[in-house]
Image (cartoon, rainbow, N blue to C red; front, top):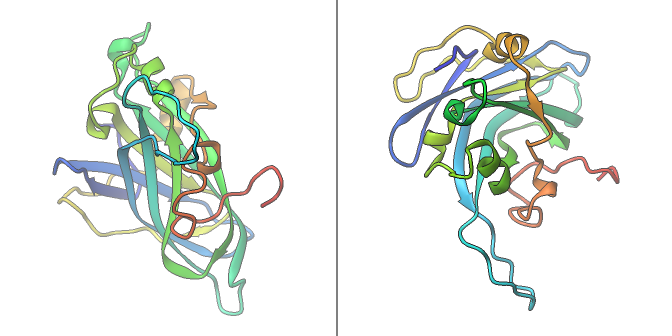
Length: 217
């Protein structure tokens, strides 16, 4: 497992401990972001009944990375943040399927808009079934535990309140492993998707924070 900052431990559905990390930088927006959990899971492609149907070629599993966080503005600060950008760093366990024998670091950003002052907020990013197949030699792992080595989430432009608790008995580790990793290897952008880029776009509208679209939301 690579070192992680402000460690977040996650219990996967199979009951094993997962450790992931979060980091934010001081910025002009002058709010505080606290991340409680980073939780990866494999989820089926949603079945949307519309009167149009094509036979699928089999089960398609997406990697869903859900981030539980809270936002606290300073006294007399903005009750709603116009934009919050989450930078995702997803390190795959796919070194057996790469030419250089090194795991792939997928990177991407998702910007959420009109984020309120509140606890229990949810951000999310996805990796498609075809992307997983591409980086695992056509054989997608059975679950997120087997597919992901580590996940880093970076929130720039905000003060950070580090989460200092423990889940699953996993201790904290140093800051920002993904920065060092990205200097040694070439990150792969373009494969981390926002919710509006997936078939999950119309689902759970009131659960996840809205995403900034090209139309400006």
